[in-house]
Length: 123
Image 1 (cartoon, rainbow, N blue to C red):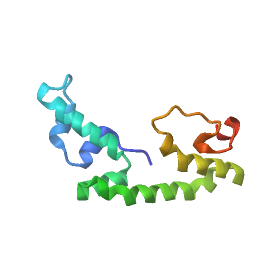
Image 2 (cartoon, rainbow, N blue to C red):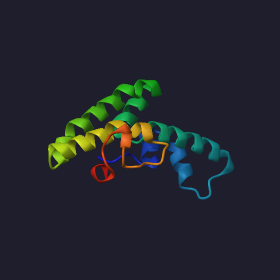
Image 3 (cartoon, one colour):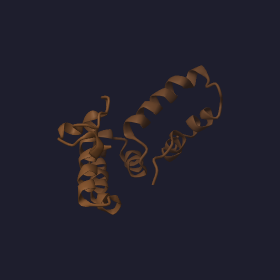
Image 4 (cartoon, helix red, strand yellow):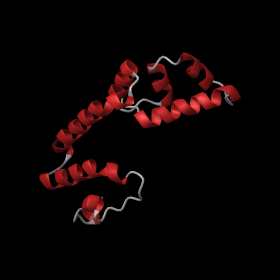
């Protein structure tokens, strides 16, 4: 499953005027600020369908925490399906659990997430 695009996000929320405006290039000046605000909201929420659906129902960003936690738990549970062995599964789990703390930083594989893992192991 892939995240929704910005257009798909607008469609899911029923923002038909925004969808129509997105078809115009360049955007009219009056619409630029609204579309930019909507894009910031989209970037903050993310495009995962379950998250967008929950946001559509409640229009409350703080209520999305449980959905994010559920998705994270699902990712962590699925690691064994894709890892060749338990050692690699541990590397992947560590990367998933610690990547959020490094989102705004330059990523270095060596010692990623304050681990003792070497670059070769994490990459």
